[in-house]
Image (cartoon, rainbow, N blue to C red; front, side, top):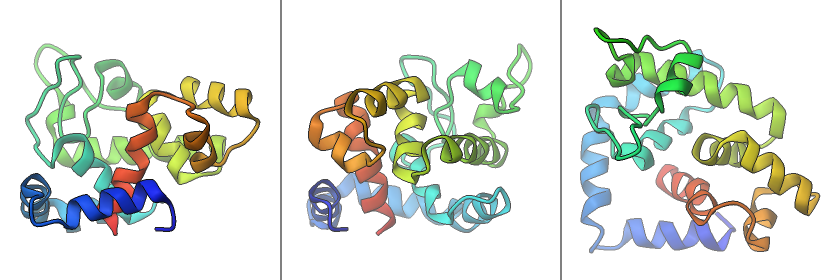
Length: 168
């Protein structure tokens, strides 16, 4: 909350003009408790459910132009890697509960590597290779220092602050 980027998104989401965020909050009502429980079952902080808010606004059937799908916006390869069935008959990226388990497993896999939930979120968005390269280049695993240095893609630098603000 002390980070300028988090405060910026908190102000944006709290403003009366933030209709999109209000829609996301309404839509989250259906999923909040279930997904929070999944996160806890998988051993990650319950607030990581807000990653789905930033990814999809809690829409379950959404597909990106780059082929990411579902509430958690898994690319097909990553979905399969995290245990989702994706074939000609079934695409579990669109199953909110199964994909929530897969998202939690992915984040749980990243946390020991980076020892930081914001960096685990950044890896979810931009990939662990991007995060590793930023850490190596700037010799820090402090997400907000990396943001200040301009490391990673702009979208990835904004990603964790959006989630942290939404959770707040």
